[in-house]
Amino acid sequence: MSYLQPRSQLRTHTVENQPPPLEYVNAYESDTALREAVAREGGAWANDNLSALGGKVFDPEWIEKANLANRIVPELRRFDRFGQRVDTVEFHPAWHDIMGLAFEHEVHALPWRAKRNGSHVARGAAEILFSQLECGVLCPVDITYGIVPMLRKQPDLSNAWEPMMLSKQYDRRPIPHWEKKGITIAFTSTEKQGGSDIRRNSTLATPAGQPGPGRQYLLTGHKWFCSAAGADIIFVVAQTEKGPGCFLVPRWLPDGTRNPISLERLKDKLGNKSNASTELEFDGTHGWLVGEEGRGIPTVMEFMLHTRFGCALIPTGMMRLSLTQAIHHSRNRSAFQRRLVDQPLMRNVLADLAIESEAATTLMMRIARAFDSSATDERERAFGRISVAVAKYWVNKRIVPFVHECLETHGGPGYIEESVMPRVYRESPIHGIWEGPGNVISLDILRAFRKEPLSGEVFFAELEEVRGQDTRLDATIDECRSLVYDEHMPEGRARYLAERMAVAMQAATLIRNAPNFVADAFCMTRLGEQGGRAFGTLPISVDMGAIIGRAYPG
Image (cartoon, rainbow, N blue to C red; front, side, top):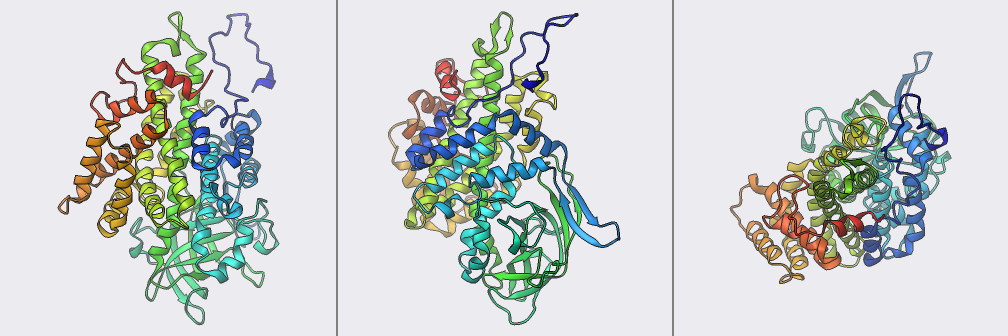
């Protein structure tokens, strides 16, 4: 940290050619593509909030909090010293501080609080910024965001819980929810035998009295993976007499007693260390039915529409963070008498990464606009549903090699834990697993085209608006159309379809909105045959200096 006043003049040598830490840069004001997209898609009214949040991303105090929350991981307390079960998770105070920051900037609830056009755009931009600071807190934040529209279909439960969900005040105290200033939500469906196959779940829910929506049930069974273990309510999928159903399971019951939720152990994950993920058991645990018995899967899919959006926004933010760190390092490190950023091959790598990052950002903000319009525009609602699945698939396929390439630009120092890059690298695979891994998402896309004709209609309408502006995109549109409407296309080609759809959508958004030197470079390398399989294989004709300068002015 800079306040330590480090010494560079040592008796044995002088410390030189070391890039300074990336600090006190506003992550929003320095992101041209994001600022342009926010203005274009209707979220400019939130600029002050976004700029304030952007100012925290590279603030040394908040960077240290993010490090602490991930280095000093949550601990499970199953019993107190008398042998009584307490089933609580203890977090480092830094976790709670970062959660409070997310609530302060309304990342968990902005569209439901603001109720104005562009609010999903503003929240999406905030999530891209926040994921550059710390990703673990965004799990309970996104679940809390995603559950609100689903819960509103059950007005009795929504009226009881929503005001506390939408509060800007994060309340860390482990006390009954009715005494708190704000609450958070967890979600769990996965069981040992089922994974993504919810119909194989064995956790049973039996009516405590009269069955039906909003009624009380008793749950018995287990869950193999429940993230955000410190939340006040758990959104649970369990089997009813008529099939899967969804339940709100609070930690505290109306009579002031603890709901019997047993936390068995915390998962030791590859990344996402700050966020407690637990195995748990229900034994006569009280839950309230959301929706109809047997309609749990459609209810979950409504919820996942919004959480999948988050699972695409977060890696978009991680791309931006990794790119910014790579450019900063390359501008401040020299080798062989030249700055790294001035060396042709490094410029190629950085420019290629910058194109990828802008393509992800621009597409995600277009999808956010579709979410904003979905309440009144059926076509935009259909576009949002299909495009968020495509984006979730593709951005998560790109993020791991993207972060690796950015880490590599730092050389050995990028592999050292004191750098932010190892944490980002460990974090990068998780959102490709959450809310449906690649195979599940690809098959969902294929199924949507076959069962919902409007999905194909709105998808191709979006692309056809730019037909004729790039022959490579025209050819890709035709290829996607032939795949989508081929009744005999095997499921084994679903990933290829998702990939081609994704790059076509990104190309279309860049052609509409980005400078020509960005859009053309993307089309020639992602749609044409002039790029390689690794980053850093752009044709020499690309204006790499302009692309890098746009990505991170300085």
